[in-house]
Length: 381
Image (cartoon, rainbow, N blue to C red; front, side, top):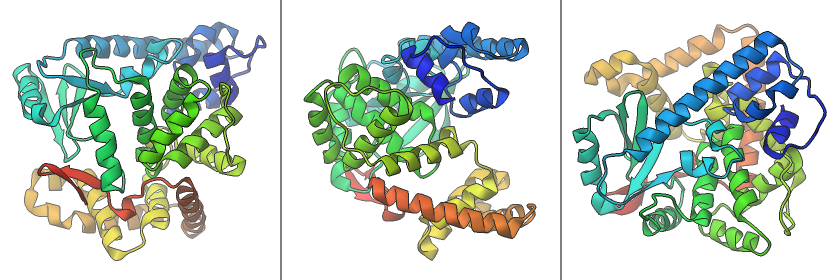
């Protein structure tokens, strides 16, 4: 699969790659299925799989066009910028082959309420509302309007990145490259604990390939230091160099090869946003890697319970007991598996291994509290 990624992005080989259905499924799990679109004819795979793959690519390109049209017609009169999505796709050889999700936008703080109302007036409806963002839907497109983007442990670091985004909002709605690169790096940090795919790694790699040259690397490292992600920047760049064919331009990455290998193992075992993990294994690993106090355990169970217990969404009186529902759900699903005790032991080992990796990467940890923007200032949650 990694050879196929390199071929897709860098056109690295003339040989025919033999691709299995497992490779296809892995590409799908990593949300990078369309990357080889220009090379399907060169791949050694069955005609049935080739036809299926081509159809998936056409569907993705259609959704890309639908998203792009919706993004260009957002009903906003206030200044805003687009985060991730198309702002990452611009660095790809073929932007339409980058898997698209929501349209993430951020306004100046004083314009948030106006943007909210303008989306409603245009026929968008609220899907979900959180402290960080409000998700709107219309005609199969989801727009997330952000109150804040940064999700870091430090109040100062979160404020620095969000202020940098807001200060660089412009009429083109696309951030300057280095600010964009920081957003893509922080996006990696945000999703590491819950599962990260190659799509987020490749987003940052394509930015670095197009935008960082020579001494610019040290400038980017200085910026990443200001949000506490210097070690992550070095490790991601090193991973891309070792496994994805990235060729650093006139700078040497001071990388830890073993840590880069651990990070790649973690990505391949999780898939995009953790979609390769089953729920029972996911919670075991989360608990062993992240939960260090009863309060943290309760918070995890409550959050997952509110997601999984439909009755709690219909009847607010039940929401206080979501943690109890989720505890029973995890116990049942975890112990009903074949070889349950053996699997729990394996998950314990995996959780502790990932816990050590997160510490070595020096990324934000949910267990340390996240800085949020509330009532006009940043506070620790």
